[in-house]
Length: 180
Ligand SMILES: Cc1cc2nc3c(=O)[nH]c(=O)nc-3n(C[C@H](O)[C@H](O)[C@H](O)COP(=O)(O)O)c2cc1C
Image 1: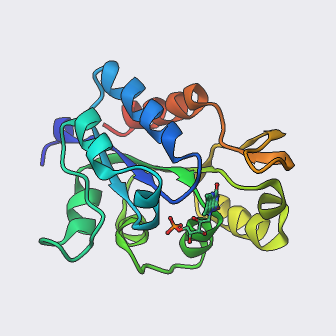
Image 2: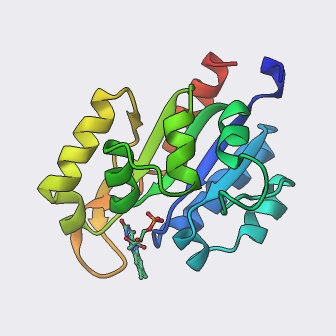
């Protein structure tokens, strides 16, 4: 694959903010960026793969074992990988080298810049284990799109809301252009 075939790889995990990944993907494709989506199994409880397939025109992979080596295909085509939204669970797995699904296997195999945009309940976000995992990801070179403060859907207030889609988009586009 030549560099010009490289894409933006969006990995969606199982957060209530998954619908915002649709906005992000739409904004990127509208500007002409080549985008490919992979999802965790739990993310499909929130948004169907067919939505991202319609937005990108490309097959969305969820199952690592369905066909070929999906994690290698995904990482080979990626100029940048962005986990949006990133659950506490996926952050914990990424920070600890666990690769038990397509998204986490792709992350470990990826040789491109990786962006993580956490989204979760403020108490989850403030939990020492989540903060420890985020610190570790930053030390590993992951670019963090820090969440903003506000009232989340369950009514709790604090940091944990997914960062603005436009600011995540800017981080992705900058990393994509640099790594082409
Ligand atoms: C309605 C609902 C909303 C959820 N929203 C979030 C969320 O925003 N952030 C988060 O970390 N977990 C959230 N969870 C819990 C995750 O879905 C759960 O931890 C799951 O194991 C994540 O799987 P994944 O990381 O493989 O996608 C939510 C669960 C439910 C039922």
